[in-house]
Image (tube, rainbow, N blue to C red):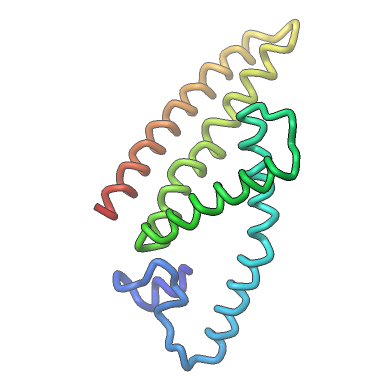
Length: 156
């Protein structure tokens, strides 16, 4: 993607492969590889998301009817979002600003805080580190909010 952006600059499409000619054989193979990657990785990610929704809703009775109904509902929601979002770059920017910041700044700080709390004899240095880690988490939260706002402003 970086080389594609260097090639096309500010005129780059959200999906960098769209900037290349449809007659370019190598880019055609690249498009096919991306399509295959999406087709074969989507079910794995989707099942994880569906199970996460079921866990969040605390559904105990996971019958085929419940699973199929939720699958259809989630697929309908994802399809509606895909039809209404004009550019994939918005999805990438929003996910990067929210999930990326959470993975880099927020989750590690929360895990460290939890680990220190579970220790019966944590040191003063560890408790000080928790405070620093939580400051980092709040900075990450701020950056995530700013990034999400900028991503939403880009489509308005």
